[in-house]
Image (cartoon, rainbow, N blue to C red):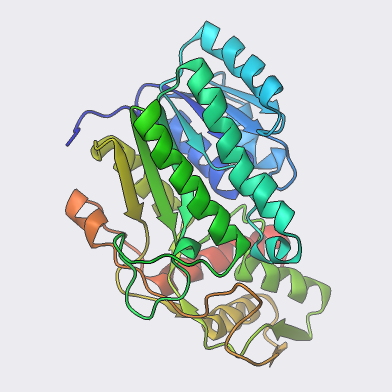
Length: 328
């Protein structure tokens, strides 16, 4: 096991740098003394998410699409000529599962092809370390606690399918040219700068109509929610500590989940206490939604990292942050 940090100091390429998780990762890498080159097409990401980073000399943002291989090859070559990259963090993807259900090209283009094309660029530029943001959606429907060994994997959303295909492409790249890769399987991640998700959607709905909150499903859906600050802690820790050629880790809370009803009531209580909550019914929120799952994070705990917040505590913290941003 590699116990020597490659995070600090270092020079990092971050795709999706202006997004929810990418911007938090960028801030953390800069805070640890690294320099960051960010790529984002600003389709979902927001420049204001990078306000802190843009004020620092160690950060450069390129507004381009990872699928534009020629442009990315050129800009990464120019940046590498100034200073070689330590590794790449790939977070550029479609983050809206429902959009991918409505149009499967969304996840093909923005989730899988971004991975495929980035791997091409990394190979050409000799960048041999890659960290990848994957998802619990790769597991599909499994009744037991989800471990990294759970299988077979049959995703029920195009998003999950394209993330799983990306994992496979990265695994093949480890065999051919990557020295090391880290795959992080995220649960539901919550916190400031969110661009999607139940808390964010509930807050926007209540801003439009403070009298009623429509909730898809019956509210019994239960999943683990992890605060984005703890997610970043875990990602950085894993890259520091896990030294196999291919490293795959669930990141999540310890045996705790939160119901959609809890989320809805928490947002209503903070933003519009008079609002009525109306459930649409059914145990799924939408096509492709896995209504109930729980993570096993034993492997991550054995590596030495455990989250501090329960799922409910992560939700409470995130509700306060998101409502403040939305303006409730």
